[in-house]
Image: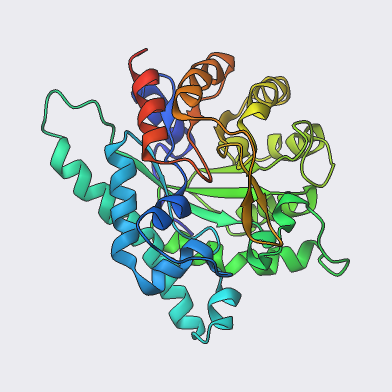
Length: 329
């Protein structure tokens, strides 16, 4: 399954090289949708716009491309077949929406690239489209992607069954790579790794964890245990952290560099804290664009090969990161 390329094993490495040693990931997708007036306080979150306003999704993708993103992450993080069915959609309609998430990103990428590729002064790269696969906890929409605590009946096979068809449909839609995001525990990590093997996925992938203490996975399991699983898989090209506070990132890059030879990818949130049960952002000290700019330099120096932003970051954040890193090429 999947579209095999002669450069499958080096697709991300090729992009990183073209980008001068560090590729730029886009920023907070739901954040930017809300900036444009989208109401997404819903169990589907940003995926609600796949139903209500797909043109806005494409607009946000284009805004991140203009800001310098080398990787677009699709709007499928919280898009799941059970989630769509719970809204009264059929299985077929849900699958079409999953495919639409990839189609919209590809259309935005191709439109942007066609407009800039012939300009000898442009410093953009042809972006890759990463199909987002959120954790089981993201589907539950109860904050458990930040705790790693699932019900006792959630075993390995249940997690594989939950992810399998979504994975198949997303790959069929033709993304350049897969992005497993906010994986909170070793059990779900194992499920994702086994699925990549069982489905014989041919496109590259990365797996990112969140962290609530800056030391371990949200479940409390050590990253050493998690990286041991990842290091045994040739289906995973990169590993890292997303949607964790930015002040955790420096030490986590150092930790990961000791534990793996995979590419390291980091895209933290702004530092604000999300209350998954109350579904609101709590006041806290956060990074502004200037702080992200300085931190991105340090993160790259420590070994991160892909850097971007997650919740509460914006195209302005990505523009600042892109500018400072691409000036160093």
